[in-house]
Length: 306
Image 1 (cartoon, rainbow, N blue to C red):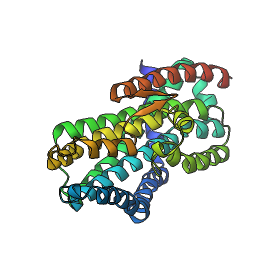
Image 2 (cartoon, one colour; image 1 turned 90 degrees about the vertical axis):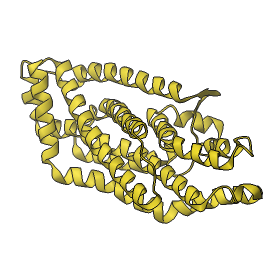
Image 3 (tube, rainbow, N blue to C red; image 1 turned 30 degrees about the vertical axis):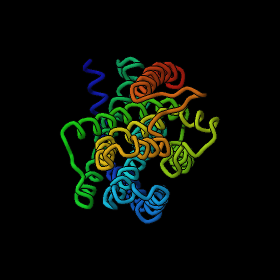
Image 4 (tube, one colour; image 1 turned 120 degrees about the horizontal axis):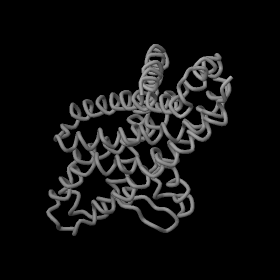
């Protein structure tokens, strides 16, 4: 146990010593948030207002502030979903740096067993990811509180930070399997570039997954990150949607909030099967278990003692 804790502490210290990597990891998410506000917020609000124009009596019952708050929360879920991909990948890239500089030879020469070494990388990267993505969530909630007066109950905060932690664990486990194949930071960086470009579309951060065909939706939801983003929408928007529904007073039978949930994909779809909140959590946890076993097996093959 001491060997495992020692390696974990070492990995954490090495990662947080690289301040530039930390700054750019967080800065990427802040830039994405700014781009959302400038380019995509209007798209979300216009779509909602167009729907309300078709049902005139709803327009008087749903305020502009409610629409704006809904749009900001959707954007925050997208930013967090993207951050829960880019940040964990940056954290696990320490594995590649150690391999490139030959540090892995020294680590492999220690009495620590191979599964302890890879789990130390995994746990340290997970802790780093949770800290950094939680900081992004905190910043986003502060901005929302200032601009929209969002109510932050204890249950809301616990659920939000819990899903962020789950997403960090899931993404770290998933990417650990990939970085074990990289030998240079250049190759890892090139993969990260492709990942950053595609991630926003796969998780529905830019365009709701509901707008894709059934086959494309199923492929998107094969990735746990898409489930985590949907879970974030459920948690971040639940209270606000209830507020909107209460303001309507049941005059539409809940159709407006149901339509919003369908459009912005609050449930997962896998080859014709629908997964609710609990189903998505089970899927993500199962993915973590499978990825953990695979990473231990891969590490034994790719990192042999010298």
